[in-house]
Length: 118
Image (cartoon, rainbow, N blue to C red):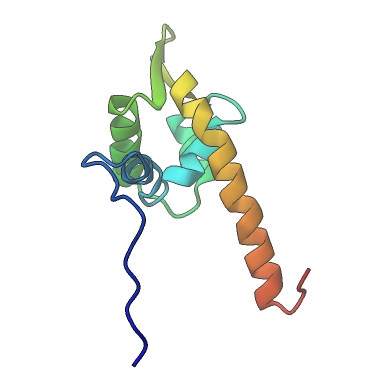
């Protein structure tokens, strides 16, 4: 029998920063929302068109949560009828490199599964 090694890694703090960040970007559709808003501000309709298959209810819920979390800024434009535009806050912009890194790894994983190993 192989002896069990002791864990030498200190446990994460009660409010683990990794868990906190993944709690934000781990939701369905959330990485896509951050992806599109990372390139330019978008209206609700534009985002709904960008994210094929997302329901209006789910998109609305995700945007509200991201706004509460301080990742997305919701701006009402003084038009008739009013236009609501969404953009990333400074904190939201800090998530862009993480999303881009995940996309890059996803491409490599996809290539590997297709037999195009680097």
